Amino acid sequence: MNRSNSEQLYQEALQHIVGGVNSPSRSFKAVGGGAPVFMKRASGSRFWDEDGNEYIDYLAAYGPIITGHAHPHITAAITEAAQNGILYGTPTQLEIKLAKMLKEAIPSMDKVRFVNSGTEAVMTTIRVARAYTKRSKIVKFAGCYHGHSDLVLVAAGSGPSTLGIPDSAGVPGSIAQEVITVPFNDLDGLREALEKWGEDVAAVMVEPIVGNFGMVMPKPGFLEGLCKLAHDNGSLVIYDEVITAFRFHYGSTQTYAGLDNHEDITPDLTALGKIIGGGLPIGAYGGRKHVMEQVAPLGPAYQAGTMAGNPASISAGIACLEVLSAEGVYDEMERLAIRLTEGLQASAGRHGIPLTINRIRGAFSTHFCEHPITNYDEAQDTDSELFASFFRHMLNRGINLAPSKYEAWFLTTAHTDADIDATLEAAEASFQAMAA
Ligand code: PLP
Image 1 (tube, rainbow, N blue to C red):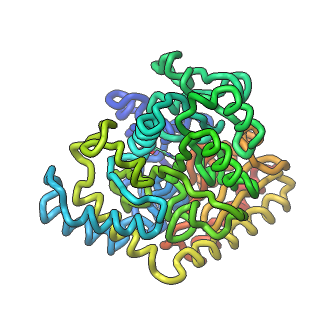
Image 2 (cartoon, helix red, strand yellow):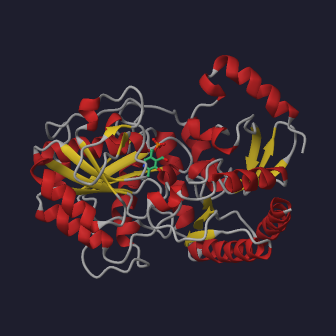
C-alpha cells in the first residue's frame, strides 16, 4: 500500500506540530514508529487517506464516533447549530435538553455541568469531592486513564499503602503524594490503602468497566465492594464513564444489567465525555444534588468554561443519543462484534498465535497472550512485538486500529457484515504472514 503522501505530510507536520501529532496516542511510537496515516475523509465505517487508500475503521476516534463517521442525523444537527451561531456565552434551551437526556439515562446524576473534555470532567469531579469531604487524597486504579490533569498522571508507588510518584515530567512530587494507586479488581488492595490513608481520602475513582488497558470487566462484587469500602470510610465514589457511558447500552455502567452485582453500585459523581458529544468536543460531570451544590455559583468549588455547553457540541450530542436510543442498535453492534471476535480467535488459533480477547457488547480488546486479562499487570505482560506486527499487517490490508496494544476496537452502528467479512479476511492473511 502506497502511503507516500502521508509520509511527506508527517515530515511537514514534524516541522510545525510537536511530535507531528496533536495527541501522543496518534503517533506510531508504540508500534515501531514511522509516519501515522493522514486521513482525508471519513464516512460510515470507512476512512480514505491522503493517498486515496480506503480503510475500515475500528478506532472510532477512540470512542466518540459510535454512529460511524458523518452520520447524516448528527451532520444535520451540527449544520443547523452552525447556521444559528456557534457560541453564545449565554445559557440555551439545548443544554437543558441534553442534561435531561443524560439524567434520565444515568439516574445517579441529580445535577449536571457541561465542560469541554473528559479530562476537565474528571479533574472537576476530584475538586468537587475534595470540596465536599474537606479531604485531599484520592485512590485510583493502576492502568486506568483519567485524562491528563496533574492528579491523575500519577503512577503507583511500591504497593497499595504507598503514595504515588509522578507519571509525567512536570507533575510535582507533592501532587503525586495526594494519590494512592491500587490494582484494578483488588478489594484487598483498596482496603489496605484505606486503612493506611482513609482519613485523608476524598474519593475512590475508577473506570467501572476499564477501557484503557483493554476492555476489562470488574470481577463480580468488585464495584459493590469498592462502593461499600469507600462509603464506610466517608469517601465519595467517582465513576469515570468517559468511555463507558452509552457504549454498551443506552445508559452507563452503573445501570448496565450485564454486571453481576447484587447490591448498590451507584457512585456519588460521574464523569462523562466522548459519545455524549457525538464527535464534537465535550465533557460533563454530575452527581448527587448535595455534592454538586459545591460547584460555583452555588458553592465554593470553582469551575468555568468559555466553550462549555456550546450549541454545536450539545446539538451533536443530542443527535447522537437520538440515534442510539433506537430499538436494537446495541444488539446489532454486539452481533457484529461476536462474529468478528469469534472469527479473529479462530483465525489466530489456526496459525498458532496466542490471543486473548475481552469483549463487552460491541467493544473488545485483543491481547497477544494466553492468560486472561483482569488487571494492568496482566495487560502489560503481553507480546508488544506481536501486536505491532499485527497492527501493521492489518493497516496494510486496509484495517484501521488504534496504534497501541491497550486500546479497544469499537463497532459502530455503521459497520456491516461485509465489513466483518473483509476484516476477517485481512486478519487471516495477517496471522498467516505473522506465523510464517
Ligand atoms: N477518562 C477516560 C476513561 C478516558 O478514556 C479519557 C480519554 O481517553 C479521558 C478520561 C480523557 O478524555 P479527553 O481525552 O476528552 O480529555
